[in-house]
Length: 467
Image 1 (tube, rainbow, N blue to C red):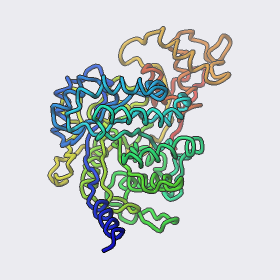
Image 2: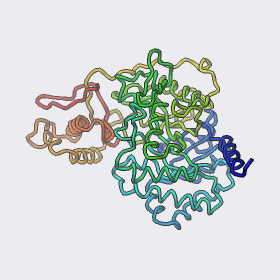
Image 3: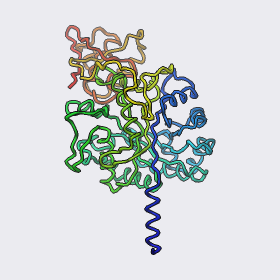
Image 4: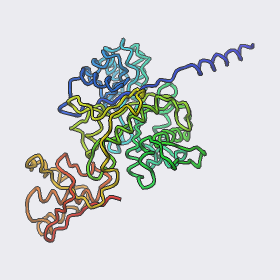
């Protein structure tokens, strides 16, 4: 055998036998004022079968609890540090030394995320070109400190696909404003360092936006008799929405010359509750999705475009977090309530037979609410803070010229001249104009959806009607 043939044989054997990491872990968010201590949180993660925990910063107390547990743990560089780490190798070196060097001997430290959904936030556009330089500086610092085993990555979402389009998956492309400028160098970095592209894939949002054509069981990874999505571009057929979304990312990566990049799931899950307009958010669907997810990933089946693909993955989230901003679903993704009680039973190892789980409560909101909805000042927790209400009203009025004219002197909704009455009009009018943006009916936690029309006399308050 010639030396060349021998070299090719060795390379082929090495490639075939290099293991691709597989685990299903959980995201450990900390946006709550009632969460248990870190050691208890880690215990709960282990009790659900989690093999890893991902954090949104590098809090030393949380990392120490995770390191002591033996679980894989994934710290993160906060988004706001990206500019300084991109600009200075010394800054990256100092951050790694302070945040991660104490855990150098912890075998569970295998991944580090630089930023979270950085490219999905148009308000911090200046950070986009700084992302890959920050990752490169951090990766260099890790190697310098003997942490070369730690794979550096970042997270991205369907918002980074042009028009969030996954229909068909073979047509997916990255947004034009990031495809060449950011994604191409990002994927080159990930391939060079043998890291993963970590994707936040929420079938809940894709299904709810397309519920008239996508069956709910397809989004829940349940058998969908009589339905399979056929991709005319590849001839492949899909049995569940998650595989379709993952293959859309593969297609987008291939389109810019990086078919070989490894894919992983940074976040996925299903909410257990939400606002009136957030249909399908319930315990039954959340339990069904995460149980099926665990079994699907454990099977090693992969996706139609990447059969046999195994990857790291993490469910969102460990706890319901009561301080999260935005619509009701934002505070209802947890596997556990903050008191440690399970919201529902799940085995993230994927080994527990589905038939062994106890019955789930019925799903009562799988269809859109059929009537009109309004957004008014929340009073179920006592009188609203008037100063905070006025601040929210001022911010909403600034978003659209003329939005608040009806609550100004002489307007149809000026009377009664109270902060609460004016805010209920403004909140509803703003929601009516921007129902897909600005966090829906939230307004700093001061608003709530209602089915009761708050209009009075000549004051007609705008509403929304779900489709």
